[in-house]
Length: 257
Image (tube, rainbow, N blue to C red; front, top):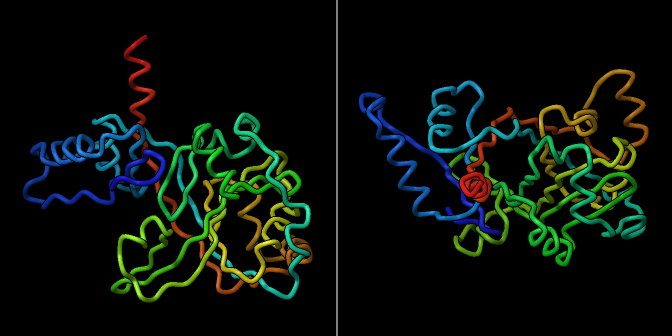
């Protein structure tokens, strides 16, 4: 699928068991990549699926990070005054120095799918008020929807939904956090400005802050004192997936050298 900001997405590759190890999967991948013809192509691979990882790597993909997401419902009762302490005064060069940027290879998720943050993309997101800063936390956000199709749950943004007709959908805000300094209270402060909405936090395995939002025990009680804004149940933490990227821009540069 061709996606926003010159990014491509490979949603799945299936080869019947009796036809595997015959080069069919590789040929399908090469055909799909030729059709996409974009600078950045992405795919998700389950961590235990080492055969798929090797196949994607054989056509130029690299594992970037293991993606995690957290879903929670914020409470409208404790919302801060609108946009209090939230601003957009931040540059991509500054974001590149934050905790979480290098770990994710400069990739965020919008409408479920990954995109690469370039100067052009970042400036466009700022113009659309999709980059928010609260204290020492900077986040790329997106207004999306959770939809249920045949028993499966998906997260889509308007880029997808304007192409398909889905009658039942629920609004959600996707949040990709980065940390100038890892401070739980600043992530909480940013999320409080989204109060009353269901939030999806996209992050990486090892995120020093987001993982604390649903702790239990004495430490959790201290944290929840600061984040009473959250209804912690229902709370979902999805299994990690490898994000694989085929960066043709980087490959071309290597060839020129």
